[in-house]
Length: 72
Image (cartoon, rainbow, N blue to C red; front, top):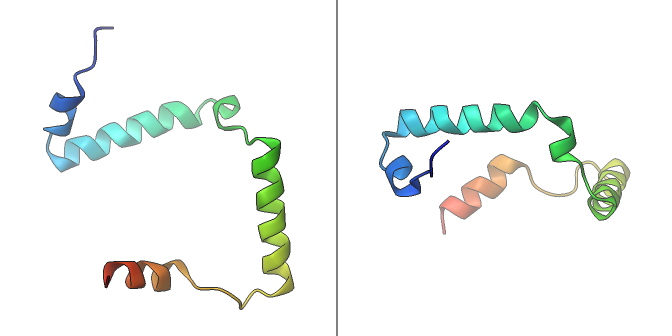
């Protein structure tokens, strides 16, 4: 396979770039070993899940956070 010219890829129409993203993600997700969490990441996720289970109404939804970010 030849060298990839990232500038050319960025010039593709959005729909073609989205197809490329999809193909790339599928190629990564087909190999479960490529997405293993570290012990530190597992610990963080466990802590966050525990906090959520203690108080599931605390915090904000993604739609609330996104709305706040877009209004800045």
